[in-house]
Structures are given as structure tokens and as C-alpha cells.
Length: 202
Image (cartoon, rainbow, N blue to C red):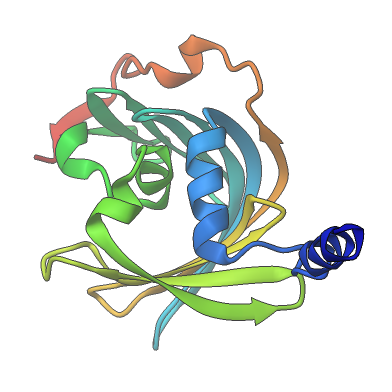
């Protein structure tokens, strides 16, 4: 019996230390109630290449703060009911219903409890270095993104690649992630600055 037990233990220890990407996604969604991170975003297509950096904060369900600081300042806030997009240079605020906007941006996708699993078909996409990848194909033809790839390492999201219906490719790398930090509730509320134009995006 001891030999059998030792053989079983050895077989368990021989299993890969890294879980599959889909398993890591499920763990990430279930275990991460709040998240803060830095990000580097590159949007490219045939005729453009745009790079931006900023910070991300998430409080599930449905609350997020996606702040661009270079090369321009833009703030995207989901307060649980409304999606606010503030363009500082234009002094313009766009207001949308959050239910309709969930899934239309990376931050909204990540802030939902099961938006990705609900709206996309998930498949394993292999391992590159220490990163396990999955691909996500939309279940509905009118989805904002035609394809999504997500890379995980140690149950944390480290990279996303998104292709939208306009042919734009967005690559986002996350760094300095903090899992379940204490985040001020004020970070997920937004009041349009005085003098800013407020338009409805619904």
C-alpha cells in the first residue's frame, strides 16, 4: 500500500505546475475582487500605431477606473450603473449606460463577474514562455471584439490582445499588479468637471 501511495504522490508531483489558461481565468475571476495595475497599450492597424500608458483599478462587479496618462490624458470610469469617458484635452464627457457598455472595453470585460465566459467561446491557445494563453471567440456576431487572446501567469492576467470589427489590434501588457488591494470607493465615482460638455453615447 505504501508503494501505491508513493506512486500516486509521485504522479501528482509530476503534473505541470502551471494551470491551463482557462483554469487560470476562472481562478482570476473568482479570487480577484479588486485589482490595481499599470498597463502599456499599443493599438495598431494598417495605417496607425498608437502607444499609451496608464493605470487600471477594478472592483467587481461592474466598477472600474481606466486612466490614461501618456501621451494624452483620458479617464474611463464605470460606477456600476454608468460608464463615463472624460477626454481632458477636448473637455468632453461621454456618458453611457453601463449594462450596454459591458464587454465593449477591456476594463469592462475584466470588471464583469463572468462576461468573458458568458459572451465568448474559450479555447486553450498554448504556452509561450511562462505565459499560458487562451483565445475567446464571440458568441454573437454584433460583439465589439472579433477575437480576444488573454495570457496568464500564476493566476494573474499579464497580457491581452484584442481585435475589433474595424480591424484594429490592441495589445495590453499589465505590470505591478496588486490582487485584492483596498481601493477607495471614490475612485469609482465620477462628476463631470465644471464647463465640460456632456454628451450621451447610448
